[in-house]
Amino acid sequence: MIRETLFLKIAVFLMALPILALCIFGVPSIAREAAGFYPGFSSLPYFILIGLYTTAAAFFAALYQALRLLSYIDKNKAFSDLSVKALQMIKYCAFTISGVYVAGLPFLYLIAEKDDAPGLIVIGLVIIFASMVVAVFAAVLQKLLRSAIDIKSENDLTV
Image 1 (tube, helix red, strand yellow):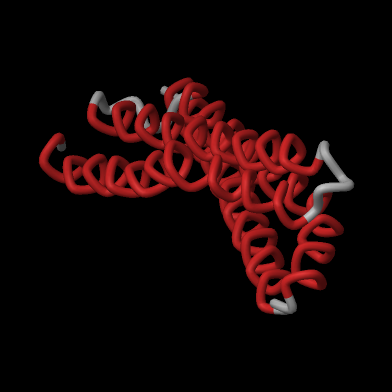
Image 2 (cartoon, rainbow, N blue to C red):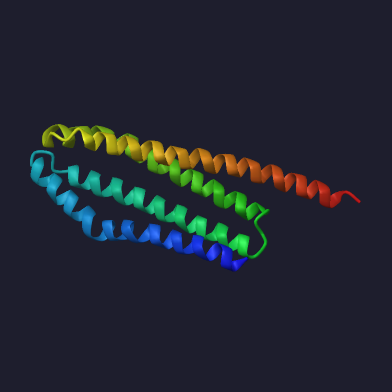
């Protein structure tokens, strides 16, 4: 069972690496550039830093829960309450990412208007809808797993 999930664990780590690099190198430069565009609005870089690092923290928390879910599969504990809780946390992380970007969409509009880059708003909308798809998918899987656990426990009680 470990060989089947090894590829998925490697994929999770490979998903984390570009975001980690972006958090270390890209986000501070984005905030500095925003400060240069809007010298009168001095708190804009802080909003950008808080928003991007909040979404990064939620993303890494969701990846950690995915790794936990894969380890439960390795230990043959896939049909347990721990898996349901991991899916629930993934759902909450995805909703958090969507919420932060919905709240930050007016700032993206201001930046796109000043820089004359309307594609920036589209990128924000894509992130919102992609994280909503992940949240809905995690909610459906959580519901299915809960039903499977209930059926399994009911069958275990039957003699």
